[in-house]
Length: 411
Image 1: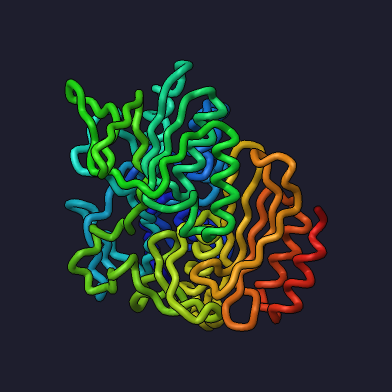
Image 2: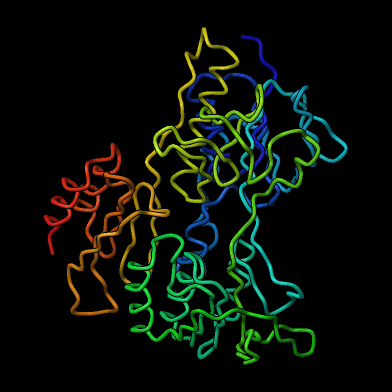
Protein backbone atom coordinates (compact mmCIF):
# COMPACT_ATOMS: atom_id res chain seq x y z
CA UNK A 1 0.00 0.00 0.00
CA UNK A 2 1.41 3.38 -0.93
CA UNK A 3 0.76 5.64 2.04
CA UNK A 4 2.30 8.91 2.99
CA UNK A 5 1.61 9.64 6.62
CA UNK A 6 -0.53 9.14 9.69
CA UNK A 7 -0.42 11.97 12.23
CA UNK A 8 -1.04 11.27 15.91
CA UNK A 9 -1.79 14.48 17.79
CA UNK A 10 -0.91 14.05 21.45
CA UNK A 11 2.18 12.27 22.75
CA UNK A 12 1.00 10.85 26.05
CA UNK A 13 -0.29 7.33 26.73
CA UNK A 14 -3.09 7.22 24.14
CA UNK A 15 -1.04 8.81 21.38
CA UNK A 16 2.12 6.79 21.94
CA UNK A 17 0.12 3.56 22.18
CA UNK A 18 -1.64 4.40 18.91
CA UNK A 19 1.72 4.97 17.19
CA UNK A 20 3.04 1.67 18.53
CA UNK A 21 -0.07 -0.18 17.37
CA UNK A 22 0.26 1.29 13.88
CA UNK A 23 3.75 -0.19 13.62
CA UNK A 24 2.73 -3.53 15.14
CA UNK A 25 -0.13 -3.78 12.66
CA UNK A 26 2.23 -3.28 9.74
CA UNK A 27 1.93 0.38 8.81
CA UNK A 28 5.17 1.20 7.00
CA UNK A 29 4.45 4.80 6.10
CA UNK A 30 5.47 7.83 8.11
CA UNK A 31 4.03 8.39 11.59
CA UNK A 32 4.17 11.92 12.95
CA UNK A 33 3.74 11.93 16.73
CA UNK A 34 3.07 15.50 17.78
CA UNK A 35 3.22 16.60 21.42
CA UNK A 36 2.75 20.09 22.83
CA UNK A 37 5.13 19.45 25.73
CA UNK A 38 8.91 19.32 25.21
CA UNK A 39 9.32 16.14 27.29
CA UNK A 40 9.54 12.63 25.88
CA UNK A 41 6.24 10.77 26.34
CA UNK A 42 5.62 10.15 30.03
CA UNK A 43 3.00 8.52 32.23
CA UNK A 44 0.60 10.75 34.16
CA UNK A 45 -0.58 8.62 37.14
CA UNK A 46 2.84 8.79 38.87
CA UNK A 47 2.76 12.60 38.77
CA UNK A 48 0.38 12.85 41.74
CA UNK A 49 2.16 10.14 43.68
CA UNK A 50 5.76 9.01 43.08
CA UNK A 51 6.96 12.12 41.24
CA UNK A 52 5.20 14.53 43.61
CA UNK A 53 6.56 12.77 46.68
CA UNK A 54 10.10 12.81 45.32
CA UNK A 55 10.31 9.00 45.30
CA UNK A 56 10.86 9.09 41.53
CA UNK A 57 13.09 11.28 39.44
CA UNK A 58 11.08 12.81 36.57
CA UNK A 59 12.81 10.57 33.99
CA UNK A 60 11.39 7.47 35.64
CA UNK A 61 7.90 8.47 34.55
CA UNK A 62 8.83 8.22 30.86
CA UNK A 63 6.68 5.69 29.05
CA UNK A 64 9.46 4.25 26.87
CA UNK A 65 13.23 4.24 26.81
CA UNK A 66 14.97 6.26 24.11
CA UNK A 67 15.94 3.09 22.20
CA UNK A 68 12.32 1.91 22.15
CA UNK A 69 11.15 5.24 20.77
CA UNK A 70 13.88 5.22 18.16
CA UNK A 71 12.80 1.74 17.10
CA UNK A 72 9.38 3.05 16.08
CA UNK A 73 10.94 5.27 13.40
CA UNK A 74 8.69 8.19 14.31
CA UNK A 75 8.63 11.70 13.03
CA UNK A 76 8.65 12.84 16.66
CA UNK A 77 7.72 16.49 17.11
CA UNK A 78 7.84 17.50 20.76
CA UNK A 79 7.17 21.01 21.92
CA UNK A 80 4.91 21.45 18.90
CA UNK A 81 1.26 22.46 19.08
CA UNK A 82 -1.33 21.52 16.51
CA UNK A 83 -3.29 24.65 15.62
CA UNK A 84 -5.98 23.29 13.35
CA UNK A 85 -7.35 20.37 11.37
CA UNK A 86 -8.71 20.42 7.82
CA UNK A 87 -10.90 17.34 8.15
CA UNK A 88 -11.95 17.02 4.52
CA UNK A 89 -8.35 17.01 3.28
CA UNK A 90 -6.83 15.34 6.36
CA UNK A 91 -4.42 18.20 6.78
CA UNK A 92 -2.99 18.95 10.23
CA UNK A 93 -1.92 22.55 10.82
CA UNK A 94 1.17 23.19 12.93
CA UNK A 95 1.42 26.94 13.02
CA UNK A 96 2.82 27.84 9.61
CA UNK A 97 3.20 24.21 8.47
CA UNK A 98 0.57 21.83 7.13
CA UNK A 99 0.96 18.05 7.24
CA UNK A 100 -0.80 16.14 4.49
CA UNK A 101 -2.02 12.87 6.03
CA UNK A 102 -3.72 9.64 5.07
CA UNK A 103 -5.16 9.42 8.57
CA UNK A 104 -5.24 11.28 11.86
CA UNK A 105 -5.54 10.10 15.47
CA UNK A 106 -6.57 12.80 17.94
CA UNK A 107 -5.20 12.09 21.43
CA UNK A 108 -4.82 15.55 22.96
CA UNK A 109 -6.33 14.60 26.31
CA UNK A 110 -7.66 17.20 28.72
CA UNK A 111 -6.50 20.43 30.33
CA UNK A 112 -6.80 21.23 34.03
CA UNK A 113 -9.45 23.73 35.04
CA UNK A 114 -8.27 26.75 37.00
CA UNK A 115 -9.91 29.30 39.29
CA UNK A 116 -10.10 33.00 38.41
CA UNK A 117 -7.05 35.06 39.44
CA UNK A 118 -4.95 31.96 39.92
CA UNK A 119 -1.32 33.03 40.21
CA UNK A 120 1.97 32.01 41.87
CA UNK A 121 1.34 29.80 44.88
CA UNK A 122 -1.75 28.23 43.31
CA UNK A 123 -1.14 25.05 41.37
CA UNK A 124 -2.88 22.67 39.03
CA UNK A 125 -1.57 19.17 38.38
CA UNK A 126 -1.78 17.81 34.88
CA UNK A 127 1.73 17.91 33.44
CA UNK A 128 5.20 16.91 34.57
CA UNK A 129 6.10 20.58 34.99
CA UNK A 130 2.99 21.04 37.16
CA UNK A 131 4.10 18.17 39.42
CA UNK A 132 7.60 19.56 39.81
CA UNK A 133 6.24 23.03 40.57
CA UNK A 134 4.02 21.65 43.36
CA UNK A 135 6.79 19.40 44.64
CA UNK A 136 9.01 22.40 45.36
CA UNK A 137 7.00 23.83 48.31
CA UNK A 138 6.39 20.33 49.66
CA UNK A 139 10.12 19.59 49.77
CA UNK A 140 10.49 21.61 52.99
CA UNK A 141 9.00 20.09 56.19
CA UNK A 142 6.04 21.44 58.10
CA UNK A 143 4.13 23.05 55.23
CA UNK A 144 0.38 23.53 54.97
CA UNK A 145 -1.36 22.57 51.73
CA UNK A 146 -4.88 23.63 50.82
CA UNK A 147 -6.51 21.29 48.29
CA UNK A 148 -9.56 22.53 46.41
CA UNK A 149 -11.48 19.56 45.04
CA UNK A 150 -12.17 16.06 46.35
CA UNK A 151 -11.93 14.07 43.14
CA UNK A 152 -9.34 11.37 42.51
CA UNK A 153 -6.51 13.85 41.96
CA UNK A 154 -7.28 15.98 45.00
CA UNK A 155 -7.42 13.10 47.44
CA UNK A 156 -4.30 11.44 46.00
CA UNK A 157 -2.31 14.64 46.51
CA UNK A 158 -3.76 15.02 50.01
CA UNK A 159 -2.53 11.51 50.85
CA UNK A 160 0.96 12.19 49.50
CA UNK A 161 1.22 15.48 51.41
CA UNK A 162 0.18 13.81 54.66
CA UNK A 163 2.69 11.01 54.11
CA UNK A 164 5.33 13.72 53.74
CA UNK A 165 4.29 15.16 57.10
CA UNK A 166 2.47 18.29 55.93
CA UNK A 167 -0.81 19.70 57.18
CA UNK A 168 -3.59 19.29 54.65
CA UNK A 169 -6.96 21.00 54.41
CA UNK A 170 -9.23 19.65 51.67
CA UNK A 171 -12.18 21.80 50.59
CA UNK A 172 -14.94 20.61 48.26
CA UNK A 173 -18.69 21.04 47.75
CA UNK A 174 -19.25 17.28 47.65
CA UNK A 175 -20.42 15.43 50.76
CA UNK A 176 -17.64 12.81 50.57
CA UNK A 177 -14.34 12.35 48.70
CA UNK A 178 -14.54 10.91 45.17
CA UNK A 179 -18.33 10.99 45.32
CA UNK A 180 -18.76 11.27 41.55
CA UNK A 181 -16.35 8.42 40.91
CA UNK A 182 -17.42 5.88 43.55
CA UNK A 183 -20.67 7.12 45.10
CA UNK A 184 -21.69 8.20 48.58
CA UNK A 185 -21.27 4.84 50.33
CA UNK A 186 -17.67 4.19 49.32
CA UNK A 187 -16.90 7.90 49.58
CA UNK A 188 -17.84 7.80 53.26
CA UNK A 189 -15.25 5.04 53.77
CA UNK A 190 -12.62 7.22 52.09
CA UNK A 191 -13.60 10.21 54.23
CA UNK A 192 -12.98 8.16 57.37
CA UNK A 193 -9.62 7.00 56.00
CA UNK A 194 -8.41 10.52 55.25
CA UNK A 195 -9.55 11.80 58.63
CA UNK A 196 -7.71 8.91 60.28
CA UNK A 197 -4.56 10.06 58.49
CA UNK A 198 -5.00 13.63 59.70
CA UNK A 199 -6.53 15.42 56.71
CA UNK A 200 -8.88 18.24 57.68
CA UNK A 201 -11.92 17.71 55.48
CA UNK A 202 -14.07 20.74 54.76
CA UNK A 203 -16.73 19.00 52.72
CA UNK A 204 -19.99 20.53 51.60
CA UNK A 205 -18.26 23.92 51.34
CA UNK A 206 -17.48 25.97 48.24
CA UNK A 207 -14.57 28.26 47.46
CA UNK A 208 -15.64 31.80 46.62
CA UNK A 209 -12.17 32.99 45.66
CA UNK A 210 -8.45 32.89 46.23
CA UNK A 211 -6.50 34.95 48.77
CA UNK A 212 -3.47 36.89 47.58
CA UNK A 213 -0.55 38.51 49.34
CA UNK A 214 2.15 40.37 47.43
CA UNK A 215 1.09 38.80 44.15
CA UNK A 216 1.10 35.24 45.54
CA UNK A 217 -1.85 33.01 46.30
CA UNK A 218 -1.85 32.27 50.02
CA UNK A 219 -5.17 30.51 50.55
CA UNK A 220 -8.88 30.42 49.78
CA UNK A 221 -12.00 32.25 50.85
CA UNK A 222 -15.03 30.05 51.44
CA UNK A 223 -18.51 31.05 50.31
CA UNK A 224 -19.40 31.74 53.95
CA UNK A 225 -16.54 34.22 54.27
CA UNK A 226 -14.04 32.08 56.22
CA UNK A 227 -10.44 32.28 55.06
CA UNK A 228 -8.14 29.25 54.97
CA UNK A 229 -4.47 30.01 54.43
CA UNK A 230 -1.59 27.76 53.42
CA UNK A 231 1.88 27.65 51.95
CA UNK A 232 0.48 26.31 48.68
CA UNK A 233 -2.92 25.73 47.08
CA UNK A 234 -3.75 22.89 44.71
CA UNK A 235 -6.75 23.55 42.49
CA UNK A 236 -8.11 20.12 41.51
CA UNK A 237 -11.57 21.00 40.23
CA UNK A 238 -11.61 18.81 37.16
CA UNK A 239 -10.57 19.16 33.56
CA UNK A 240 -11.86 20.04 30.11
CA UNK A 241 -11.17 18.23 26.82
CA UNK A 242 -8.29 19.84 24.92
CA UNK A 243 -10.21 20.59 21.73
CA UNK A 244 -9.65 24.33 21.29
CA UNK A 245 -7.30 23.69 18.38
CA UNK A 246 -10.15 21.92 16.56
CA UNK A 247 -12.48 24.93 16.51
CA UNK A 248 -13.91 25.37 13.04
CA UNK A 249 -13.05 21.81 12.00
CA UNK A 250 -16.68 20.72 11.78
CA UNK A 251 -16.14 17.89 14.27
CA UNK A 252 -18.58 17.31 17.12
CA UNK A 253 -16.86 19.02 20.06
CA UNK A 254 -19.77 19.16 22.53
CA UNK A 255 -17.84 17.18 25.17
CA UNK A 256 -14.53 16.10 23.73
CA UNK A 257 -14.39 14.70 20.22
CA UNK A 258 -17.60 12.89 19.33
CA UNK A 259 -16.95 9.52 17.68
CA UNK A 260 -18.86 6.46 16.56
CA UNK A 261 -18.47 3.03 18.12
CA UNK A 262 -15.25 2.51 16.13
CA UNK A 263 -13.64 5.69 17.58
CA UNK A 264 -14.07 7.45 14.23
CA UNK A 265 -14.90 11.18 14.32
CA UNK A 266 -14.88 11.60 10.51
CA UNK A 267 -13.52 9.63 7.53
CA UNK A 268 -9.87 8.97 8.29
CA UNK A 269 -10.00 10.85 11.60
CA UNK A 270 -10.10 8.93 14.89
CA UNK A 271 -9.84 9.90 18.57
CA UNK A 272 -8.58 8.10 21.66
CA UNK A 273 -8.10 8.63 25.36
CA UNK A 274 -9.46 11.37 27.61
CA UNK A 275 -10.53 13.52 24.66
CA UNK A 276 -12.71 10.90 22.94
CA UNK A 277 -16.47 10.50 23.45
CA UNK A 278 -18.19 7.50 21.93
CA UNK A 279 -21.31 5.30 22.30
CA UNK A 280 -20.29 2.31 24.40
CA UNK A 281 -21.99 -0.76 22.85
CA UNK A 282 -22.44 -2.54 26.20
CA UNK A 283 -23.21 0.37 28.52
CA UNK A 284 -25.75 1.70 26.03
CA UNK A 285 -24.79 5.37 26.37
CA UNK A 286 -22.11 7.80 25.33
CA UNK A 287 -19.05 7.92 27.55
CA UNK A 288 -15.81 9.85 27.80
CA UNK A 289 -13.36 8.08 30.08
CA UNK A 290 -10.51 9.97 31.76
CA UNK A 291 -8.56 7.00 33.07
CA UNK A 292 -5.17 5.57 32.25
CA UNK A 293 -6.19 2.07 31.17
CA UNK A 294 -8.72 3.43 28.71
CA UNK A 295 -6.04 5.60 27.10
CA UNK A 296 -3.98 2.52 26.29
CA UNK A 297 -6.87 0.36 25.11
CA UNK A 298 -8.50 3.08 23.02
CA UNK A 299 -5.20 4.16 21.49
CA UNK A 300 -4.76 0.63 20.17
CA UNK A 301 -8.38 0.36 19.04
CA UNK A 302 -8.33 3.67 17.20
CA UNK A 303 -5.10 2.75 15.38
CA UNK A 304 -6.41 -0.67 14.32
CA UNK A 305 -9.73 0.75 13.12
CA UNK A 306 -8.05 3.56 11.21
CA UNK A 307 -5.90 1.06 9.34
CA UNK A 308 -8.95 -1.12 8.68
CA UNK A 309 -10.69 1.87 7.13
CA UNK A 310 -7.68 2.80 5.00
CA UNK A 311 -7.01 -0.73 3.72
CA UNK A 312 -9.60 -3.36 4.79
CA UNK A 313 -8.14 -5.90 2.38
CA UNK A 314 -4.92 -5.79 4.37
CA UNK A 315 -6.00 -4.94 7.91
CA UNK A 316 -9.45 -6.53 8.14
CA UNK A 317 -12.70 -5.12 9.44
CA UNK A 318 -13.20 -2.46 12.05
CA UNK A 319 -14.27 -3.56 15.55
CA UNK A 320 -16.49 -1.62 17.97
CA UNK A 321 -14.63 -0.40 21.04
CA UNK A 322 -16.35 -1.90 24.10
CA UNK A 323 -13.91 -2.10 27.02
CA UNK A 324 -14.73 -2.83 30.64
CA UNK A 325 -14.00 0.60 32.15
CA UNK A 326 -11.32 0.43 34.84
CA UNK A 327 -9.49 2.86 37.07
CA UNK A 328 -7.33 2.64 40.13
CA UNK A 329 -6.09 5.04 42.79
CA UNK A 330 -3.30 4.57 45.33
CA UNK A 331 -3.81 6.38 48.62
CA UNK A 332 -1.70 5.86 51.74
CA UNK A 333 -1.17 2.09 51.88
CA UNK A 334 -4.34 0.96 50.11
CA UNK A 335 -5.40 0.65 46.48
CA UNK A 336 -8.82 1.48 45.07
CA UNK A 337 -9.93 -0.45 41.98
CA UNK A 338 -13.13 0.19 40.05
CA UNK A 339 -14.54 -1.90 37.22
CA UNK A 340 -17.46 -1.29 34.89
CA UNK A 341 -20.05 1.46 35.21
CA UNK A 342 -20.36 3.03 38.66
CA UNK A 343 -22.31 6.08 37.52
CA UNK A 344 -25.92 6.67 38.64
CA UNK A 345 -26.64 3.17 40.00
CA UNK A 346 -30.05 2.04 41.13
CA UNK A 347 -28.45 0.42 44.18
CA UNK A 348 -25.05 0.05 45.81
CA UNK A 349 -24.29 -2.95 48.00
CA UNK A 350 -21.16 -2.32 50.07
CA UNK A 351 -19.53 -4.97 52.20
CA UNK A 352 -17.00 -3.96 54.85
CA UNK A 353 -14.45 -6.76 55.04
CA UNK A 354 -12.39 -5.35 57.90
CA UNK A 355 -13.19 -2.30 60.03
CA UNK A 356 -10.36 -2.63 62.56
CA UNK A 357 -8.44 0.38 61.18
CA UNK A 358 -10.36 3.19 59.43
CA UNK A 359 -7.05 4.39 57.96
CA UNK A 360 -6.60 1.08 56.12
CA UNK A 361 -10.08 0.23 54.87
CA UNK A 362 -10.96 -3.08 53.31
CA UNK A 363 -14.20 -2.90 51.35
CA UNK A 364 -15.90 -4.51 48.35
CA UNK A 365 -18.98 -3.14 46.61
CA UNK A 366 -21.28 -3.82 43.69
CA UNK A 367 -23.35 -1.31 41.72
CA UNK A 368 -26.71 -2.33 40.26
CA UNK A 369 -28.46 -0.87 37.26
CA UNK A 370 -31.70 -2.56 36.33
CA UNK A 371 -31.46 -6.20 37.35
CA UNK A 372 -27.75 -6.72 36.80
CA UNK A 373 -24.39 -5.83 38.30
CA UNK A 374 -22.86 -3.03 36.23
CA UNK A 375 -20.01 -1.87 38.44
CA UNK A 376 -17.65 -3.22 41.07
CA UNK A 377 -15.30 -1.53 43.52
CA UNK A 378 -12.65 -2.73 45.92
CA UNK A 379 -10.64 -0.80 48.50
CA UNK A 380 -7.65 -2.51 50.09
CA UNK A 381 -8.54 -5.87 48.51
CA UNK A 382 -5.85 -8.14 46.95
CA UNK A 383 -5.76 -8.47 43.15
CA UNK A 384 -7.28 -11.96 42.82
CA UNK A 385 -10.64 -11.30 44.54
CA UNK A 386 -10.77 -7.89 42.88
CA UNK A 387 -10.49 -9.56 39.47
CA UNK A 388 -13.27 -11.96 40.45
CA UNK A 389 -15.61 -9.00 40.90
CA UNK A 390 -14.50 -7.62 37.53
CA UNK A 391 -15.80 -10.78 35.90
CA UNK A 392 -19.27 -10.05 37.27
CA UNK A 393 -19.54 -6.81 35.28
CA UNK A 394 -17.55 -7.68 32.15
CA UNK A 395 -20.67 -9.48 30.97
CA UNK A 396 -23.21 -8.15 33.45
CA UNK A 397 -24.45 -10.90 35.76
CA UNK A 398 -27.90 -11.01 37.38
CA UNK A 399 -27.92 -9.07 40.64
CA UNK A 400 -28.67 -12.03 42.91
CA UNK A 401 -25.82 -14.06 41.41
CA UNK A 402 -23.44 -11.13 41.75
CA UNK A 403 -24.37 -10.59 45.41
CA UNK A 404 -23.59 -14.22 46.13
CA UNK A 405 -20.11 -13.66 44.72
CA UNK A 406 -19.73 -10.50 46.78
CA UNK A 407 -20.44 -12.49 49.92
CA UNK A 408 -17.60 -14.84 49.01
CA UNK A 409 -14.92 -12.13 48.88
CA UNK A 410 -12.52 -13.09 51.69
CA UNK A 411 -12.42 -10.78 54.70
